Image 1 (spheres, helix red, strand yellow):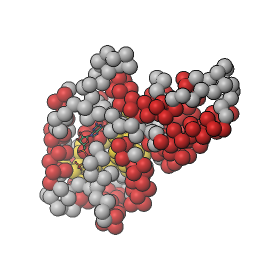
Image 2 (cartoon, helix red, strand yellow):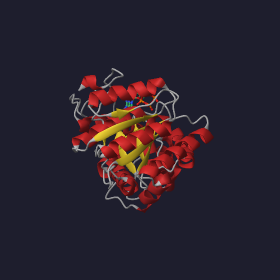
Image 3 (cartoon, protein in one colour):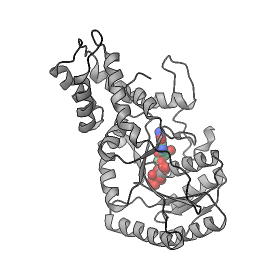
Image 4 (cartoon, helix red, strand yellow):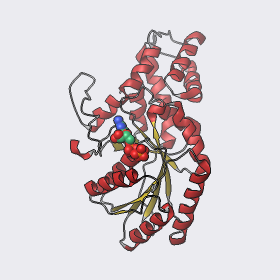
Length: 327
Ligand SMILES: Nc1nc2c(ncn2[C@@H]2O[C@H](COP(=O)(O)OP(=O)(O)OP(=O)(O)O)[C@@H](O)[C@H]2O)c(=O)[nH]1
């Protein structure tokens, strides 16, 4: 499936099992993707050996290491507290500590793990996808469409980012590859009118899921806010429940900056859930835990590569172990 990516590269091709065996399967891409995160964590934690209890100095070091690994101060404090309460069997080695870290990360991730479901009645489920340019929004729309297709749902795309011709073109390329219909408008046209036409067509054709691309211009918050509000109004005229989801796409490589984007987009749009992309090959994957702990917004899926099947609903327990480097 290496030719599915219009950007032409295959970021996942060089993933290896932990024992060095090459494997391009999904789970090894997840492990490979998070390797830098878990490496950073274990680098920061190396040398920490406790007795049956960790002392304050060790707990301070662990808390710092967690913050350095982008898990954020709140999650770090929570994990520290848990570790402080833990009585270890014998002298605690790094792995025993990481087991506890993984358990606590899983507790943080579990409540927010929520796959995007197609449940709308009447159809279609309308999913607005928002996020800054370059976050992986377009690719994520394609991956989502693919995920739905795999579940036998029919999909339509709407090119609601009319600001840039390139955005429309890129989405059209994906639609052709996926074999799904797409509704577009002229560059510079009214996004709300494209989205209106799309919902009308999708409803008439009995489409299950309508995925809408939107402009990612944060430079002018007011304009973006007005644009999204108008899209909502127009959708509401055809279906009072629409949009059913407002999914914010975040680029994990932005680390803490991804968190400020949540803050801003929560202000301009009623964000209902998150998808975090580019978790492969970044040492900043811990930001996923920070986002879960700080905002409690549903996390629908994670992106760990550029290929169509590189988007998966996440398994919090497995992910927690992967982040802690003990999966
Ligand atoms: N490694 C990796 N790259 C990704 C992932 N998701 C998207 N990308 C890449 O990130 C780049 C930007 O993705 P786009 O989908 O074009 O991002 P966008 O937010 O639509 O950005 P614009 O096209 O600038 O509006 C592309 O080269 C994608 O292939 C991911 O999970 N992992």
